Length: 132
Image 1 (cartoon, rainbow, N blue to C red):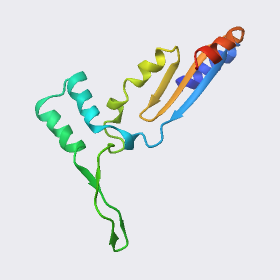
Image 2 (image 1 turned 90 degrees about the vertical axis):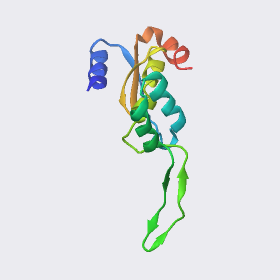
Image 3 (image 1 turned 45 degrees about the vertical axis):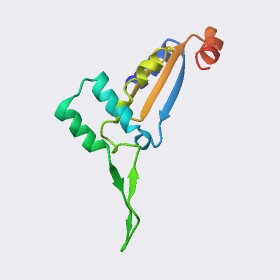
Image 4 (image 1 turned 180 degrees about the horizontal axis):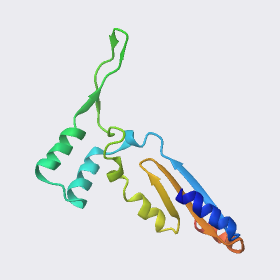
């Protein structure tokens, strides 16, 4: 709703807007579990039993596939987290990185919308300097 509202306000003010829509495919599958545990401990301050719970939830995971009566062999999952779990903690610094280059951002987990409003007079700066 915020993105749509900002776009409508830009149109009313005759201001141009660049919109980037990001859907990070397979984002949950690529999380570095050790890095995530470091973020939980060093940046968020989770320790003791709570950190142990996260370790048991994230590390030493495996999967296998069953089709009919046949099963694949078990494969260890060295990267990734269950979808809908702690991915937001891992990706929480992403909005700050985007804001540092003057884009607004809204989103959740692996879907984000980035936008930048600019006067058409300054379109070269907005299109070249800020996007490159």
